[in-house]
Amino acid sequence: MIKSYETTYLITSRVDEAGVLSVINQIKGDITSLEGKILNESQVRLADLGYPIKDENKANLFELAFEFEGSKLEELTKIFKENDQVLRFLLKEFIPRKAEPVRSEIKEKTQKVELEDIDKKIEEIFESDKKDESK
Image (cartoon, rainbow, N blue to C red):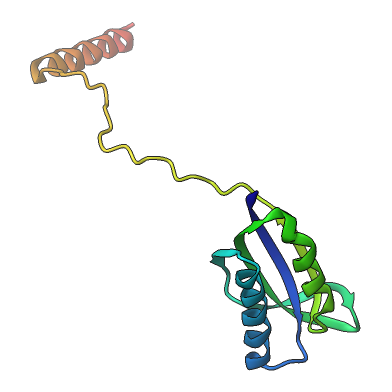
């Protein structure tokens, strides 16, 4: 059964930008070769790690969302584990949010008020204020 998955992985900071892009393209290629479909991907960013991983304090962080056959997850996990340039990875199933339909019309309840009625109300307020001051 095809499900949606998301993976976040850390690529070693010891490779240059071209090396990082090579790792990302390799993983994306592995997903598509296993009949997966890439849905979304983030920009690569250099992240400070909360604790050292394999003697590194920084790593390139990348996130990828894709659709994939659940039975092939073991193969994908093996690919991540065998890649020496991937320090850590997290692979999880997620349910993509469906966009809510945009309301073309917003119906607001409005009350029509005549200008004369507003003037009368203002006069009543002023008169009540004058009576209060005279007491």
